[in-house]
Amino acid sequence: MEQSQRQNMKMVFVLMVSAVFCAIATFVALALIIDRSDTPPPSGEGPILITVAGTPVALYPDSNKTVLLVSEAGTAVAPESGDPAQPTADAAATEVIGATATAIITPTIIPSPIPPTPVPPEVIFTPYVVQPGDSLYRITQIQNTSIDLMALYGIASVDLVAGNTLNLPIANPAYCPGMRPHVVRDQQTVFSIGRIYGSSPQAIAAVNNLDANYTIKTTQVLCIP
Image 1 (cartoon, rainbow, N blue to C red):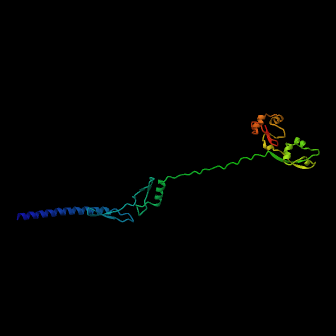
Image 2: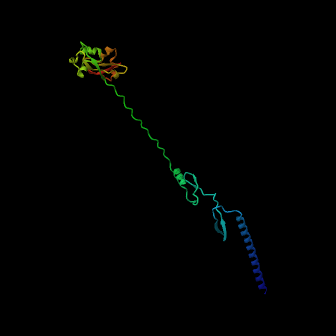
Image 3: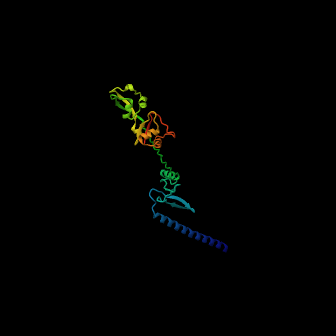
């Protein structure tokens, strides 16, 4: 009889303890529900229901807090709305540009070659009207030419008819800028030409690029310094 009473008392105690725990759990759950109901969920987003230790819990995501994807260049990129795991097209472009070195190629400008200044010809032609009593030698005294130079271009004594116009070859002054042009005549040398103009053979040879023997030829035009 006493043993039965003891068992009944244990059962009553267990039931009382269980009732106390149930009351506490109910109070805590009500407090959580009342506290969550005071904060309205963000517009356009529903709650996420999860279970924690057998108790349903509603989670409301914060749309203002987004995950930032960091590119290789160190640039933070916000994901597209609705798919936090995918970067935007701009983010992908930023990542590619940041990861790839940009090479700046400076074009090489090759200057156009300057054409050489053409060398004026040694001989030019000028019209000459034959005078009564002219001879080839007399013409060489008044024009910068020679008998051999005239013969080279087809002028002979038979062409010296008074009033006749000759296309007379003469030394070109532009061939020797700042100097005096001279047509080499038969039997002349650099030494004899130098005496005529008061110039040294060495100076004449240097200006005209003559060899060591001062070699010249008839009808050649020399520049006399």
